[in-house]
Amino acid sequence: MSIQDEFDRDALREGLDACGADGWLLFDFRGINPVAGRVLGLGGMGSRRLFVYLPRDGEPVAIAHKIELQPLGDFPGRITPYARWQELHEGLREIIAGKTVAMEISKDDAVPYLDRIPYGVVELVRSLGATVVPSGPLVTHFAARWSDDERADHLRSAEILARIARLSLSEACNEAGAVTECELQTRVMRRIEDEGLFFDHPPIVAFGANGADPHYAPQTGSDPVLQPDQTILLDLWAATSPETVSADQTWMGFSGRSPSERVVTIWEVVRDARDAAIAHVRDAVTSGRTLRGFEIDRAARDLIEAAGFGEYFVHRTGHSIDRDLHGSGPHCDDYETRDDRALQMGVGFSIEPGIYIRGEIGIRSEVDMFWGPTGVVVTPQSPQVELITAS
Image (cartoon, rainbow, N blue to C red; front, side, top):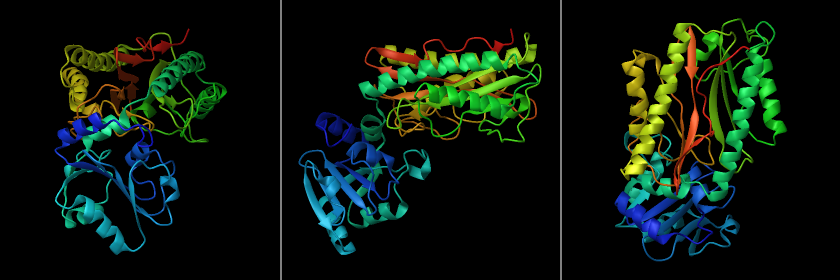
């Protein structure tokens, strides 16, 4: 959604009602608030402070520095230019004094991906006579939802990544003693690039106990050679362009034909926790029940805890995905934070429970979900069910 396009006034009013606000006050300075960039559709944000006020009724108002007015050439409202700080303050006071404004804040930093506004800016807005409340429902609707094109891009990327992951792990599982983590990582990256996809960071490849570090990064020269009967964790993500929605997946392999009972047990607990979270989302959407981010986390975490592995599941179950791989919408989290934001139709997110036992093993399974007009879609279409093993 971009304010440069026809703005959805009904959705704005509904979001403001949910926030308890009179208007949405967007702020950005040198790109520190990606929500503002997504909603305003101005491309690269400027080097001076920018405020845009979207009221319940009436025209939008932009307060922009006099040397950075060109990006606002098609702005559908009033522009108040400023140069001196006094002009900025007076321009703000005129539009927000006595009002309740929604901004990208989160009380006690409870949801860091919503908490985008510097404390000093919040102090300034309050000093000019406004009350500030979190803008969560507005962010979900206007910044986190996928367009039809983004959804199509994601679906294409998801199936390509799944194919690459299956092929790469099937090969690697038969290469014990002959392939290192970095060699497998390079192979995966080359295949992603050959498909015309884009990524901002190399995929994670972790053999054996290295998988117990959820954000492990192999290092050339110190990365191990794959040994027989080791797990292989492959976490990969990519998009059809840098400006669209990525797919994000984790797949597991085993460099032998018969994984031990313990490996199989841990894999099945993780897989079943993933599927429990998926089922929880589907049930809520089908029944029309409001679904909040923390509930999805609990569906997966409860199963892992019941199986006796709770202390080894050390991150949230999933993250919002929009044009940022870790997006601004509701996260599946009742662990690192308690994300009580409600999901809305049009949002996407990952489901990625894991069990990480230091010095022994790390197993994660990750798929993505999208809540579309016809219901919930899981990507890829065929998630991993069994460990990929040597032939």
